[in-house]
Length: 156
Image (tube, rainbow, N blue to C red; front, side, top):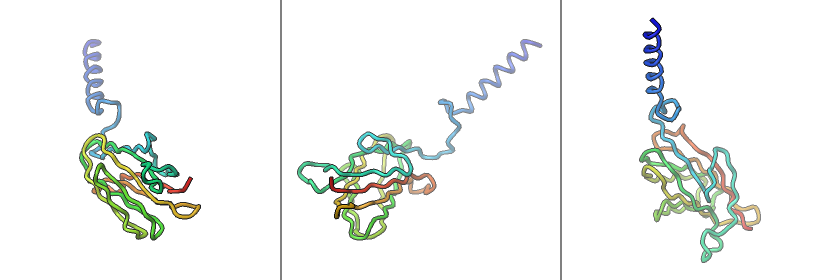
């Protein structure tokens, strides 16, 4: 009887471990995992950043962050942008740069491969207060799986 209990306990334990996804987490039900790093800082939902350094020396008014986004699978990434009308900004994924439309809202779309993908945010500040731009990133087919943060492009 004792042997049967041990075998049963071992079988239940193996089943329990097998139901996990190998790293101690519950299954993610297909939800895309992504992480954004700007200048090697992991961006969290609600973060507010100040961009006050030029990205390239030859363009001193072009402020922003070099970054990368890591995804758990290939996705179409949407980035909803909210800004003051007339703001000059752009987002680049590798060599694919899309300028802002100057309107209050815009949606950018990029195709990202599994793993690390470059993702840079640029802007030109106005006045002493700068330009605040709010970004919301999410997989195109899952708007509830999002990351929202703000960058204030502000002169040093």
